[in-house]
Image (cartoon, rainbow, N blue to C red; front, top):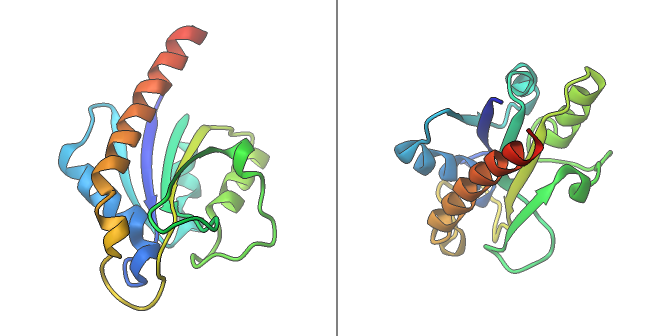
Length: 155
């Protein structure tokens, strides 16, 4: 089973870049056997990347109406398909995952999202998001560990 952790977002638009900032910190630690990918905003270009992995952990900003810095952990079933929803990226990663399913590839996907405080043309993150990066990295590590436990149980 090949696993990738992919950060998505635009670091030029403040809190929209949370996925990239988390990935950059996570790259400093790394985990053996797990690819860490800066997905940027060209999500459509990630189709061939997504096809290479059986397990994906996607980190992105996620507006759900809670306090800035709120962390969400969702499966694709919990997110549901958001057809017609807009995204700051050229295409929403959920649309890319839907394309994968049509191509016959159904990776195990978990999305770690964080509620943005402000999305505007500015580098850096809001304080509320920046201070939670270490916690998000711990959640990612736990997800990787949980994937391995589920794989062992299903073997």
